Length: 270
Image (cartoon, rainbow, N blue to C red; front, side):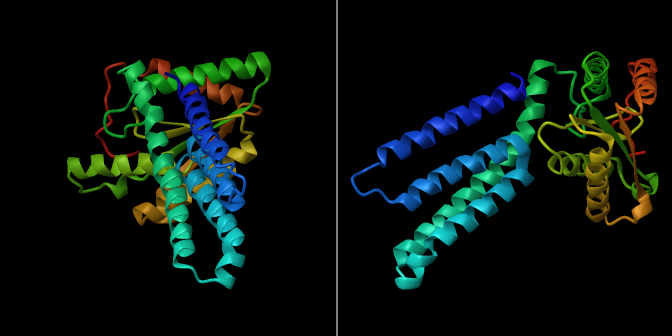
């Protein structure tokens, strides 16, 4: 199953369940705040499924603030323990759906790719491997040439000094941590992969080069924080389909020319 289909399915099922509870809650004197809370839960679900953990977290925080604001008059007039408990339950529910749901969705995307094609996922980073990245890049380039659709890519490299002297097992865990950070710091629509030379690649559909620079700079700075590395230890370059078609084609050609059996997945990030 493609993730886009799963996204629509998850949102559809969630919406049906939530709207069903809303319908059954329409009593002669319904609690309108709780009805609004159910709709906020749907918004959090959409945020988690469409934007992943970070989007789910932001949606959960926004929903909690809105719900708390709606409950302030009640709390101000009567410090009812039942109302306080209800607020806490709602906040926890928003958080679980947003954060945990978003993290699960982020992993499901690559899990589906593995089910569809067992050779599409890099063994150590658990994001797309070069073979699958090549297919994605070829598809995006074709769409850009035929329909003028815009996309950007980022190539992210970590200095070998970060992994110098580390045992192979520690290097593999570090590679996984880098991949996890990039995956959770971008939109669900964006694709993350690892090339055979150790670099990570981020493919951002429907994103102009300027927007790609903003997203990539955020990811790069986040990686520096995660790794405890100096700014120059993590480098990134951005290519956009509107300006760099030839460079993108050259990158695609270099992936085609790479030895099929070469495997640097367990090596240090380049």
